[in-house]
Structure formats: structure tokens, C-alpha cells
Image (cartoon, rainbow, N blue to C red):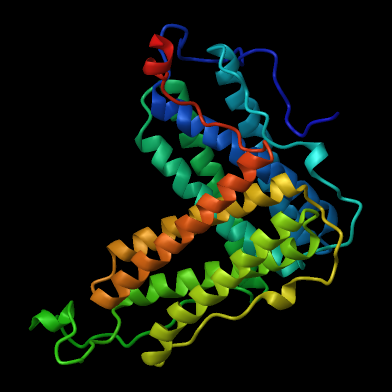
Length: 348
């Protein structure tokens, strides 16, 4: 088999809802396409992780994610075939080399599984809220349930192994309080109020994700084949380090703990398990997750300077993402998401 995906020949016989005369909307096509590309990447990465992990418990939860991704690919392929929509190329065996040393530790693999699964859950929930065709809605409803189950498995294992890093604790207030002045949002006379619970939670979460991302990029920068890809990934590692310093300062000023560094979870291997194409797509996915997290954090931050900080980090992340897209395009690796017809071009 020269590709990781399995393409079924026909739609399952037990379909309960006729779909032949119901067109897929732009949101349904877009989310199905995004699901396919993400699951194609997940299959490649988790195929490598399953082969390399030494801990049978870690292997078990990653295997669950691998099998779930394979099932989703089959269903999306069926839906695309039904409407004669081209199936994305995605990633396959040619993007993977399992005959190399273990690049990331079992601990890293488990933590990566947690945050990648959590991000998929966000995407699937968004998809469910923006789809109407019965089979598509039922598909995303079912994958939400399986993804929640996988996330529970991962969190339980992290707790069992003492690897689950909890957000900081804060005192329980003695009574209900109301905001007394504008200083709650703006800085008046240089006085800043303490961080509130949600601001702390999002700061801690973003630091966790940047720590994971920095370690991921550290490994990819060691093994990338192309000098341009290597330099691009190294630049992302430096950006993550910078963001960690900026976000960590907010917690330090309020005497709150900062999450652990994860660089030690990366081996000294220089043999790449992934193609440069897959590595770049993985970096792009990481940026999307980071910008999404920053956006939610911005919306939930009442302190003005914290909100403006997130805005700056989003802009920097988007600029880095743009350069990555140019690199993917230059190499002919960037698959185009389905789009509206160019009427002006058709007219000419």
C-alpha cells in the first residue's frame, strides 16, 4: 500500500438519510476538507509515534487516535465521492520514515496527543454548529464523541503518570465583589490590578502550548532536509521562546508559577521521520492552533495591556504563517482549499 488512506468504493449501505439531491454548502465542504487534511497528517504522525513509543499505555491512546483518524478519512472520502468532489492528496507513506531513531520522548508524544486532540475537538464543534445536511451533521457529532473519549483517555493517563500540569491555584473569595473603578480595565496612575482567574488560565494554557510547540520545532529543526525549511522552523522556535518570555512575565509579576520547559523531551537524532512537506504542514497547523488560542485569550482578557499583548503576538504569528505558506507554495506542496469560482476569469 503506497498511501496511508483507505478509499472505500461506495457509501455505507446502512445510510438512513438520502443525500443525492441535497448539495453540500461551503461550510460543509470546507470543514470536511479541513478534517481530511488534518486526519491525513494525524495518521502519518501517529503511525510513527505508535511504532516508536516504548510505553504500552501511551501506545494504546495514540493507537486509538490513529484508528479514529483512519475511520474519519474513510467517511469523508465517501462523502466526497458521492458528490464527485476530488479527494485531497493529503499525506501518505512517502511522507513518513519510521526506520529512524525516536525523535520525541513518550512524555512528549502523550502531551502532543493531548493538545492536538483538544484542538481537533474545537474544529469539530465549530463544524457541527455550521453544518445542516443530516449525514454531515451526524458525522461531526460522532467524531466529537470519539474525540472526547480519546481526550479523556489521555488526561486520565497523564494524571496516572503524574504528568498532568495543573493551572495555578488562587484564593477563594470571601464574598461577591463588584468593579469599583475604571482601573479594572485600564491602568490608572500606573496601578495594575491582579490577574483574574480566566486571564491566569489562558496565560498558563498559552505557555503550555508554546512550550510544546518550541520542543516540536526544536526536533523538526534538527532533522529538516532543506536549508530553507530548517531555517524557517528554527525561526519559529525563536518566536516561541520570545512568546514564552512575554507571557511568563505576566504570571511572574503576580507571583504565579510558570509551566515546565519541554526541550529535554527531544532526542539528539538528526534523522527525519517526516518529509519536509509534512513538517511544514505540521508547523502551519501549530500556528493555527496558537492564533486560535490567542484570539480566545484576547476576548477573555479585561486588562488592557494583556489584550494588546495578545494582539501583537497574533500579528507576529500570522506573519510567520504567511512566510510558511509562501515556502509551501514555492515547493508546490500547498493544496488549495475549495473556493468560489472566479467569475471575472471565467468571463474573460
